[in-house]
Length: 215
Image: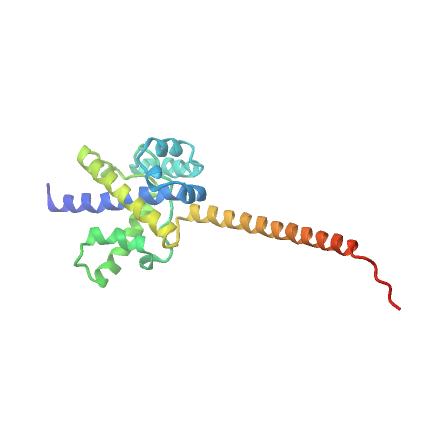
């Protein structure tokens, strides 16, 4: 294997694993994060496969892949696109993608130069896996590597979102905001109802007090 090919496989397997993990996390429901163990959300188990078949994001993702089919993109499982965090290098997930690619000795300048490469790859990945990536990652060995990175990055992203309150994928973020909105409405309604009950009880208590005549 040439050094150039080895570098391509190394970089692409990392990026692909991160992309799949971020995509999968984006398709989860807020209740999943709150009520299920990490082991129950494994992105490679049977439940994840069934979830992928009914993912509401699939229609747009398949359209993107079909529209760019003539460019050499494959017909493999579609992973819906989720943008990288807007905060860029300020987000630990982005740093975690660049770190194993560039190596532990990479300085800040190297990381800054690596970010545009990651962003460009991520944007192109929206159309589907490229023919060169399918060829490079198609062996049993490389598929295992990608799956390993997928699990690794999903565990990391799950921890960052649930424990550290870092920015989640866009689709999940939208759903979390909607859940918060609905909870706020319910809390306001509950507070109004409780206040009404207190007021009613107060009125009843006042009505039961003996009438005192004033001289």
